[in-house]
Amino acid sequence: VDNKQLDLKSEDIESMDATKLSHFIQRNNLHLVTEYNPMTAIGLFNSMIPIHLLMMMNKASPEYEESLHRYQEAAKLFQGKILFILVDSGVKKNGKVISFFKLKKPQLPALAIYQTLDDVWDTLPITEVSVEHVQNFCDGFLKGKRLVSVRLQWTPNLNISLMVFFREKIMNQKKRCQRWNSDFSLLLLRRTK
Image (cartoon, rainbow, N blue to C red; front, side):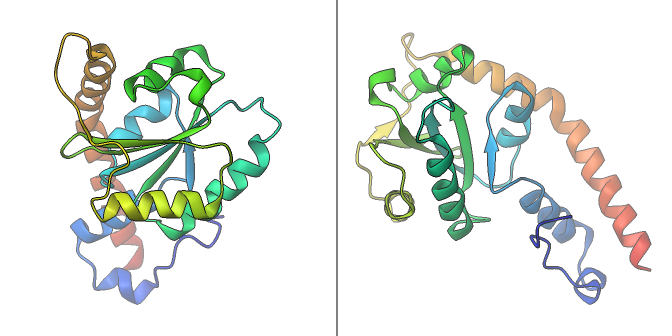
């Protein structure tokens, strides 16, 4: 059921407090790659993983299936460290996400990495998605190396509506998610006793 992603034995659960169990659940409740859409946006931005890697690519392109497979393979290398997200550039509403990273359609496919804590991000237009390209880009970002030195500047030209939308959704859903995680953690603890 969990695609062998849950590597937690019952004796580990017994020695784990509710906070640690909640963190484990939050880290492991997403797929290796999550497709961005209005429904998943809340969970993505509410994630405890502060670094997000977005692959922006048109799902209708002939290279999509193979590219997604390679992206998933790279995601395994960074599971729990970087949240891997797919943004379908063929969906008109996703244009705001693409423009947020100052990319244009001719520059796609592209990777964009974003650190939610300090609003630092970087982009990498690519002609081919490979495990090596993704790994090198992520490793470089984690080591503080940027291809493009970018820090968000709050100016009138920045697409603030996107950030406001995310923050409002997060604030509205945060209490519900926390309550659900607490209830779920308690349920798991009760089952193990």
